[in-house]
Length: 162
Image 1 (cartoon, rainbow, N blue to C red):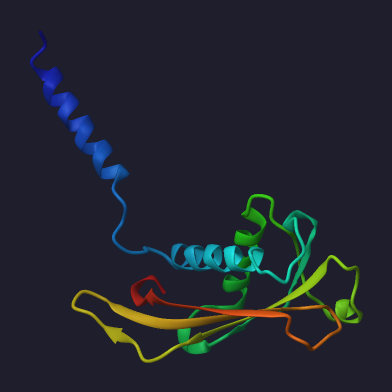
Image 2: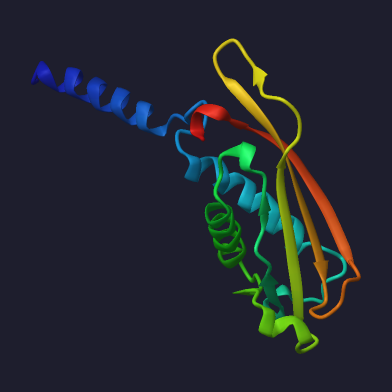
């Protein structure tokens, strides 16, 4: 029997175990926003105000409000939210809002407003700094100021990922 085979197998197992292990924190802004976008999309799709099935809906995404102290660009947050909504199985159609849509559209159109803001001071942990946030989401009909559904998501970004 080849004596190098067990050593090779052990090396391969260690390599695979290292690749399969989850990182202990987000490494990039993209990863940090990915989870938030998915949580937001899930909440929106499950909103009781929306008719079923979600695939029949058209969500008009208004330009988000993003707190500058978070060091996250408005475009990056919008991209993350859009990707999460489009990636949802059986999810809605998604369009970027513009002023031409202000008059309203079909019964299947809903406007999604979002605001991402700092929710307190930075929190210093022993090995990293966390930045608390609050994401506010609301749905209304195009052309109307009446909010038909709203929710908030609270969490914290690892500041090193920003």
